[in-house]
Amino acid sequence: MTGFVEAAVRHWDFPRGGAGTSLLVRFGTEHGIADHDLLAGTGLTADLLADPSLEVTARQELEVVRNLATALPDAGVAAGRQYHATTFGILGFAFLSSPTMRDAVTVALRYYDLSFAFSLPDVSVGDGQVRLVLDDRLLPRDVARFLVERDLAAIHTVIDELLPGAVPLTGLEFRFQEPGSCGQYERTFGLRPRFGCPANVATFDAAFLDEPRPLANAHTVAMCETQCRELVARRRARSGTAHEVRELLTRLGALGTPMPSVARELNLSTRTLRRRLEEEGTSFRALLDEVREALAEELLATGAVPVEDVAVRLGYAEASSFIHAFKRWKGITPVAYARQRTGTRRGRSVH
Image (cartoon, rainbow, N blue to C red):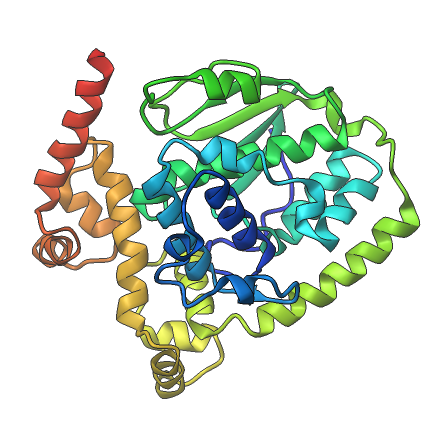
């Protein structure tokens, strides 16, 4: 199996253009939700969103997602269908002018932090199939399903615009359990998904990767990529130390890595790293906890990994330290959480 380039970011916490947040607010108001309810807790206003140059933090957009998902929990797919290639600005024009689907996918992964996605993609080709995996393990649990549905529906919509009506999915799997109705999945994706699977995976025939695109233009795509590079460089320069630390912890998988080692990786002194994180309203421990919590949920939810092994994988010297931390995060012990999750899955599978 061959892979594409890795996505440019390995965590969802990157700054975004305001167009994605505006789209979500517009979608919500069209479904009867007041814009001030959708923007609650974000510090944003409708007037601010009207500014086409607005940039928002991932956490501001995430709060809008949370407000929307609370009001419309089954609307992830419908929201995703509102995203078109042009929604992504200059990145979208790079998609549209790419010579082939393969080139468009490569551009998307290279400048993934110019998108509005929260799920982390992995794209590979094997046995004549393209396999797109959307990793949701670092997403907050309360909005993970909504975001995966939204992101996949948006990707599917854009692909259909690149090669209209020509790329049917051959398979679709979701990690979450089957909801009450599957009609929206079948209408949008053209097939009934499988639920409760190990990963969120969509597949399609690899022959479509090298189909010539009707709007391909080498000069235009080169110009668009130049602008993408400039825009992403400016955004990454402003993304902050907290983002770098979180990305580093996630990428290395070294959750027991001490702060001085992380500081060295970033070419900073420990004191400077601590000060910068304080200025951004966080701390090394808070970021480490955030990544550990997400991964702990993932490992425990399988019911197959003993608590002691989870503790080791997350860098704890003793299981008791992990148990104490988990109770602080969730209010229950890891064992109780694992029983709760596996019990919920069994209960749903019976139906």
